Image 1 (tube, rainbow, N blue to C red):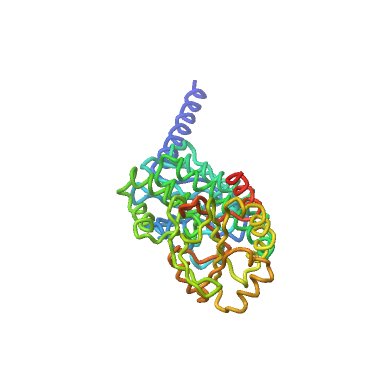
Image 2 (cartoon, rainbow, N blue to C red):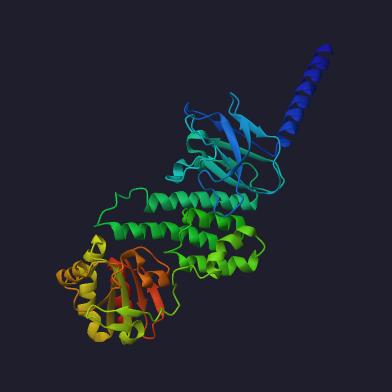
Length: 392
């Protein structure tokens, strides 16, 4: 009888201890346990917020709100969160002076975890060496489940398109552009598919971490068309989509190409629409000093011209050059004098590039017979295949 009483007391003590421990954990809005195998990482977890779209998951731009020490067992806990909203947890190297550094180069190794807090306690498990990739929340709500899905998609897209890219050279620059486009496309598609604006903004930020939409104006237009209707009051939507309203985007599919006056290589000046082909026109933006552009002149545009010029194809080359002699020598050497050429010979100060809202080459626009943009920035085999299908 005494044994039973003692055992009952012990059982009651254990039960109460577990209850108290559980209660203590639930009082922490964000807590967790991290496997800490690397000695070069601080045993601290930092809590960050992001006041603007430009600062969203950007290196050194997040605001550090709090920090939590990680104990010997790998456990940490934050005692308070300022309120519902978008946050990130981050860990840092022992040599890192700035605790709001967020790494992007390889998402498989990213040192931070974005999440949305909605008032319920959240418990995390992760490995410090691959913090974002291995992070798992218990009892995921729908929005954080979407973030977890986006993380997996981003890692897979990176591994498929970018992880094995070689150093950029004249031969592979166009393929590099294509690989980056495919990576971004996966994220853009997710941003349009998710029902959660915070997740959509994160996907857009990861797709264009530098905030450059020169080659993604169509995607930004589609994003804002959706989210300005569904979440117009969200401050980051207004910040991001201001580019659409101010007209600071590159010309997009469906727009009329500007009927711009072009200084031709024969000394005359002609407007774009007076030069259009009867079925299709390629506006090819290039330069004599651009290796990939020169390769495309010889290997892609030349064969396309021979095959389709008589069927109503026109090519108008516009060069970002500043030296008349170099420009015309390149046209001759590439046997590109079969089609039309123009340049203001002002180099990077080209008024046409300023009107189009672009700054990089090689680039192109494919126009119908009225001058409306059908497609853009197609190169190599992709360009040939598109034209074959259009002019067949």
